[in-house]
Length: 279
Ligand code: 2AM
Ligand code: CA
Ligand code: CA
Ligand code: CA
Image 1: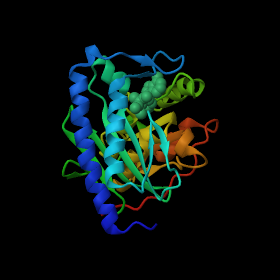
Image 2: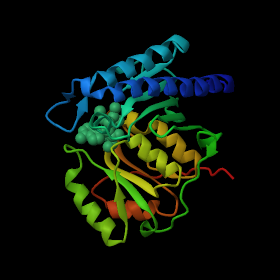
Image 3: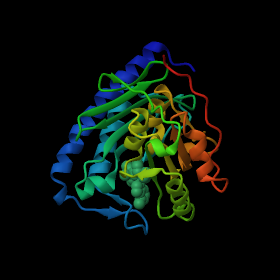
């Protein structure tokens, strides 16, 4: 890692500023969403995008490039820039687009930073609930100014598990997984935003979160929060996870292994990274 503490501080501060600005822009579009033209990505009618996603990504990308021209960038709507850069921003301008376009409040702006391939900064701005989730490796994770801590649950029956799937990937595994979860006395939660669901795991509101497949812009920022809040995560960035995505599991330490067992061997979830706990 070549970035100094000063460089990290500057990026952490700036990411929070940009996320709040982008979230304010997002709210303008959200209030006027009836005027937005909705496009569909591919053949999945649930997979939507509008000019709001594209404009917010352009905004975030240009603001980052102004301040940190040497950094690389991966965004859901705009593709990639300089993947070899040591500091790589991984952003989702609107995570929860289907909610956004349907008038549901579960959407956010997600900005993550990986340094030398490791997630180190995570910022998730939820303007509908005035919540700014943020964390930086070794410095803890917070919602606004309140420190985050994962749940103390030791069994899936003791809380709610975030989960979800796409039509095209993993759907055959998903229903059997839900059946096993319910049989154990567990309960599922889906809000349509991978970033917010991950932030809720960090906050202890959910005991964990499993998706059959996520993209890095859905969860890289959130991974920092979960790790800093004492949670476990699978090796999501293994292989070509950064660009192609992977199965995804984050959970509090007390239920991680149980959820992994419920997922079963047909989905390769990978080893959890051992996470240091803040005291
Ligand atoms: P998005 O709103 O940025 O596209 C996990 O559910 C993630 O997948 C969400 O964060 C959401 O990100 C995306 N998503 C949800 N439903 C989807 C669908 N039907 N097709 C593609 N992406 C979807
Ligand atoms: Ca997303
Ligand atoms: Ca998105
Ligand atoms: Ca999308």
